[in-house]
Image 1: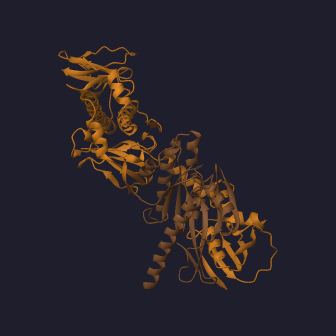
Image 2: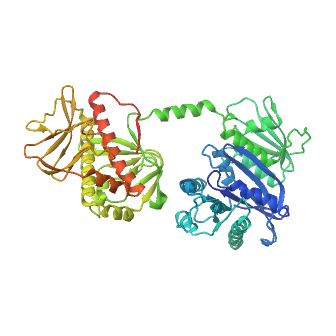
Image 3: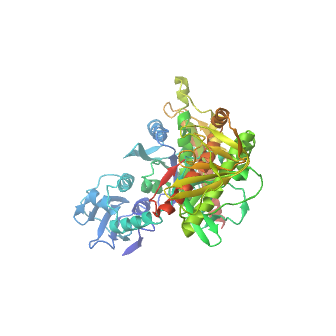
Length: 206
Length: 395
């Protein structure tokens, strides 16, 4: 749930990058932080959680307009996948407004993707969020590895397995080279802002 | 003057700091833990923590420790802050790092002793029931998810149905309802299936062979029945016969196990009179389909025999190495009637067919054979008079 800060007329929303360990969540955020310097506000916070890192920074999406005259500020997070990081995961997911699920395209990680999606579904349910209602996009990452001869899952198969029931936007990407990183981010920002527009509209019409 | 107060069980310290941070608040958060005789304080300037105290700790170390005060009362007092700035980290960095330390066990959580007590008593409960687990489910086969809270009945033995579930998380007891009581047989955990392979043999509703009750909150995946039924119907008649015979064994073993648990069982109670042992070497991988007559699978115990199940025409006896029920020839003996006739099963083609099945269908079959072996083990435990310890079996 986005927070309206009346003092500085700002709506703050939360975008979380979720996915199995080493699927490229932090690489996505590092690329954004390094390449979208005009939109990044403040330094990137990086917490070393075993096997993964938890990242956070503020992001000011440009060109997406205002809601009720308020500026939009997004907080971008990655969430640690490991079971033990329950407290961090809960804090990061609480009040989430949009999710990018970063799936690993490597064939050998197929099961890890499904497990992580199930885990996300459960963790959202615990805090009262319906996976079918929250703005969500899928990113099938590491497509660049195909050129190096690694066996990858075809886009259609990944979409069938992960996105068959949810039917949300999905993108092939390579976070390492930056391919479709921006596209994924603007995809989730658009969905999130549309959703917020609806929420604020609804609140005003009550 | 207090501007905000409450308990950290409702809104955690991380969220509280974010809330006050977003509001650019200046003042002091005062924390009182019911387990300690000293308070904690966090000082904020423009929403950012600048100092903290918790007993002998100051600054960052103090604020980190306060993240372990999970049931403390808090109040925020809006006031000017003139203390030394000992904390230089940003608000979110403090929150995320402290939570990481909580999860890594670097910050003590209050009250420690109480939590441990609860954990110990939970783990000792019903420790004589064997647990059956399974491998990770292939999500292609899961068409929906359902939740059952602890104590809720998932399946009733007296009802009909063919729904097939897999346990995604939690534990559920398989309970056989007998005329003189309810008998817990086994406990199913993550990856185990609820539903009988027998339901594929007659599409439509089949009477359930046991009641299944959630022991903890259970999350179930509803399996794609049509997909599984399609795979079953594509099997050769011989493989279908093998599966039908396994289902028959499981139902009989479950009934015998329930009787033994209710009334006890003695090895002197059964004698295979008028039957002769069916010779099969221990190292022989061979299985037979019964063409005529009767076979009884027994376990020899010092003073006599324990009857496991009775088999008849079309049932299967023998040893299929990749579908091990832990019965004959290693752990049980087959006795047959004088008119017993059989034909050998071509295990090479059965194995080839098995190898070509989907992993999920293989898992369903393995779940059945594991259930046979686990239930047989529980039956023997009643004879030994022991409780059998806490056994886990993964298929």
